[in-house]
Image (cartoon, rainbow, N blue to C red; front, side):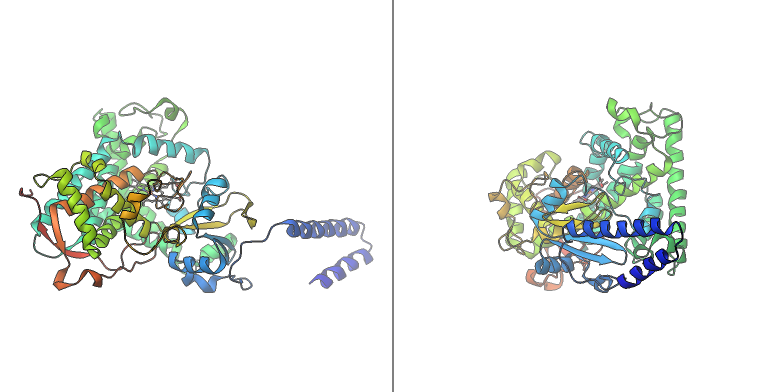
Length: 525
Ligand code: HEM
């Protein structure tokens, strides 16, 4: 290759074409400059040797939280993989997570998006996939101050009411096996649906669930287009593009109708602050010449510059549905499964509930902060089973982390699952032991304790954390307080299967089924 190039340059000079000296000089300059630059650049992080063109695509089955944790043990906390044309780095230790999410957070705060995600989020018109920048900052403010804030009565009321409805459904099945997985997935879907659209009608919900399922399949599917150069994507050998267009059309039809109904309600002045849902909140920013007014009671700095399109509103609603449904459902189901596998831990949680709440009423919101062991059990559940096992980030610029070069546009997977089970951070890391948190007061989710990052840390951390924790703790508290549970068909706790499946979230591979019997002295409604 080198000798061919030299021969080519010589032939240019021999041809004595007037421009040839300029071409020879320019090519030589760029070769020497490129060589010097690469020599001065620190090495890429260690990792398995990539093959020409396809890189490490032969190891696609390793790209799960478990597979990447194994690679981390072999190569260290920062592992480099090349997938087709894409640079990838996996982060598997608390210290490397701190480097990426805190020390170099400016460079690591973009989000990667597959072809499907890009299309289904209306070209990153949402917050979760928006690149870090002014638009994302304004959306984030809107979420933290309004959509998911403590003051937003409708979201919190929907958690309370829906948990009560779930407890009534369990009471009606007393003495018979209950599919807890199915139950809690329905619970969180109802909570987010109602918080987003204000409606409890199950009629529209079924259509919406079908749309969500198709979105979820498309976002998680393997698509060749993600690994080839952009100019070749039109080939679309798997016929993905048609399915993507159809899925987005269905969402357009569904949400446009809801937006239109909400706009009529706003025009007629029928929206009040306390009953506003997320569509109402977002419509206050719609760029249709009639923004503001109605239920808009935002802090001044938010009212200044945020103007949304219908696409922004649709994409944002999908963020809430995806961000708040499977994550919370998976955490509740794992929490209940761990407590059933360790009956002595279930007894400790129930003893605390009996002592604090008594057996004559259900748990209410105010009780939660007086239940420290329940909080420890929630932390332990999220340590062992972070609902989003890989936090997906992308670099905005070239960086050097712990002496290794990470190029701009590199996809970064921070392995929250591996970090929660890192043996140098957690003694006996695979054991469910809530008591470990009673001793360690520093272990919280505020973002500075990198050994425990189920909600991420830093700029892109979860804005729905308070709402998610509230739903998780209220549901687990209510299920443990109102009922005693045994596994069906004489199954022993030790036989309960605890395997998971890998996707954007990591739910249980097999749904948790158990038999409830009432525990309170008062009848449940
Ligand atoms: C147990 C419950 C939950 C867990 C464990 C969880 C976890 C996470 C994680 C790990 C991230 C990414 C952090 C990062 O990349 O560094 C995230 C982001 C996000 N979550 Fe949650 N989440 C939960 C509940 C919720 C709820 C209830 C909502 C909304 C109602 C929500 C909305 C979001 C959104 C919109 C983002 C994107 C933030 C951004 O990119 O700036 N999450 N969540």
